[in-house]
Image (cartoon, rainbow, N blue to C red; front, side):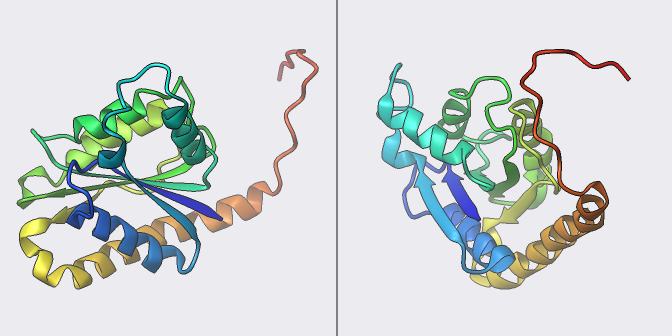
Length: 183
């Protein structure tokens, strides 16, 4: 399983990045994960075309899981994350399970990941199995139990999908015949 952790914090090695990576480690255990700090690519985010950014977008789109993490700026995610996600075409994240994570200075923006980030991820075709995960950075000194609580919630949402996937079984490969089938 491949996991991409995309962090839209303008500050490298941020609390947001730490929280996102901790979530991945605690939810999925040891997995092949890549931390992508958009602050390291800020000079290329608005360059069109950009081979570097195209490759970065491709790696995220080829991941099984993508965590999109951002501090809350003006009640939403950062411009860095928005610029990165704007590089995808419609359904550019189809087949990727996305976990939206945001941090903020207090609880007043706790709905931001659900009301602002999830709609964008769904528009891009990602599967979003959880509500937005929000962390109050004012409580950063005792963040471990808060992460554990969110991990439990996220694992519960993911585990609820198991019976559905078992009932559906393996999906047939899409037909390339170009013919439309009616029910």
